[in-house]
Structure formats: C-alpha cells, structure tokens
Length: 165
Image 1 (cartoon, rainbow, N blue to C red):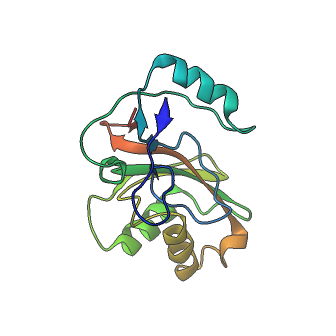
Image 2: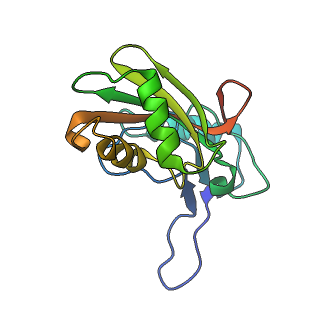
C-alpha cells in the first residue's frame, strides 16, 4: 500500500484531519482521511503496529464522497471546571446566549464537576468558544479554570454523536 502525495513544489502525504483544536486540548476518536493506493486489510494491521504510543486506529473503511471537513457536523466536548461547577442550566443559558443562532446546541449534561456538551459546526465552535463564553459571563477567568476535551466528532443521530467511520 502506498500513501498518495500532494502535487506541487513540495509534495507531502495526502492526509486530512477533523476540525482543528487548539494546542493543549486533547481529543478522543478523531477522524482522519488518508489517501492510499492499493488499500487492503493487511495495511490496517501494519498501520496499527507502527502507530506511536498512545495512538490507535479504531476503524477504517474506504470512503467516497464529500471531504471529511464537510462531514463533521457535530462535536462532543467534556468540560471540567477547576473551581465551582456552575450547573447545567447556567451553562445552557451561557452557551445559547453566546451562539446567537438556534439549533446549534444539541445537549448539555452535567455531573456536578464537569459537563458534556454537543454543538453543531465544530469548525466554527470549539474549545475557544467555550472559554470566551464562560469568561464573558463571569463563570471563569479564562483557560486556566477549565480543562476541555473533545470526546467525539461526527454526525448527530437523534441522541448521540455518531462517528463518521
């Protein structure tokens, strides 16, 4: 199996990742597109063996159609508060006010010290959005008061984020 290269003066492997994340924001189960020639199931085993420590390939499939960036419709985040947890309703109000658009917030669920939040358009609304919204509302002072992790990216399937592959 051979990874295809981009064209031009400085060719590099043709790879596309999901929506960008700021430095220091961890993510789980991120999608990636890797253009390859002569794909076969043995290639998946070879890739798994060669992955750096802490990385794994969960699933793989041959995909045709729109680019990965167009397929990522929603993202799920787990937001940990280093101070007092403001509660689900307060978080929902702050997020809805900051979005300025309806239909982009799918879910807010708290457990007393963190919240799971699912938002549409992960290319527009990510960890920085949460920090700005929570700071503007006075819930936190900034990044230092939060730990944000993206736990899934894909499409909304009635009550959950469905991975792309």
